[in-house]
Image 1: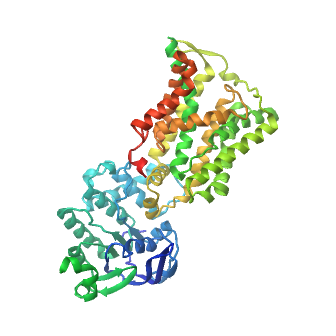
Image 2: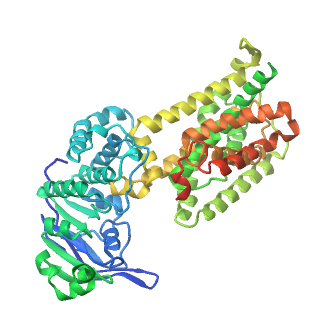
Length: 254
Length: 290
């Protein structure tokens, strides 16, 4: 696989997920055009993270379908979806505390290339990843920490490393779950800048609570409430939608 | 002098603890399964070496290779057919399954060979004594110690230096993230389980010439091994090996000063570790909360 990627188009139809009687995602039709940055917003419990887990195969839908570039990917296992060029970050910082930054990125590069059962002469096989690894760590501003264990990083740096992991997969579709949550102002600015840079040849879907980030970055916004789509459109349009103001922005804007 | 000798004895019995705890730990890390049948596979290793010698005259050296490989394959089938079906449920189910399997394996051997121990003599090459400077020691016991250290170091190298090791460490810590990176964790589960079982079998073959070979030999040991794994830190590979040798030495020294008490010492240590450092001597604190 090469560096150049074709942005993917994502579509869901009637996507449904129940948890023993509670409907977390209730018939969602989502259209994410190739090459756009698309935000999912909505109050807590609106079903955003469940939707992410459905899109990446970590949860199986109760009903409906998911299409990637028109192909049905409903119910595929997470590693299969990842191999189709879908990368995600997790809402809660999720890293291997004891692995170094270099090992993290190399692991992701292996996942991308799917090296199968071969494991002998591993170090030689890994050496060719070295340049790519350095490049990615450089991009997210972590190159000077390359050989530290991830457990020793500060919070903002951990989020940056997660982004590097997702990028290592050369994804065509990048799913980011609250990429700026808990970050200081400087880290937010750096992350926004990074997303702007990497969106060039891919599609990005992000869950985000920071409305400034949403406004700065996104082409389209889908507002979810109680597991359903409440509104969909460009940010300027959606933010002035009276239903959205009551449901979500209400407390902030009023 | 007596103390040094006892410490050395402890290292030798610690070799078995280390190899068994290592396998148990790798399996627990990768599958989240506490394999109660581990002691039974250790017993099968020793009994297997005996049976192969008795029936086809297979030498101990060959058994050292053949038995672990065969048991590793048996372990893989066991994982695929049974363990994998329960792995999504409460860990208690697999605990009960492996406990049941341990009893079955033990009774099958007892049915065929009774409860008395089978004789197994040392390989000729390792018969006799060797002068270690401070004391003269049986060659075979020295070999067991050296061999177990070499195997432990090799496993450690595989885990830290190879691609597979990286994947195993990664999926032990965060299976979800590993899968999100496009790595098929499931395809490594069965080989890792088989490998853990092969280590138990290897320990069994090593034990055959110096321990009593009988159906109950694994059951006696497994409880101590659980204590070793807890002391070292559940899922910590380095910890279980280090704790293996440590517990071996502790029991041996206990034997010297308070022989009636020596069997309980390891559990006293376990209780202390749980009170003072619940994640184990070498475990990460974080592991306990999860």
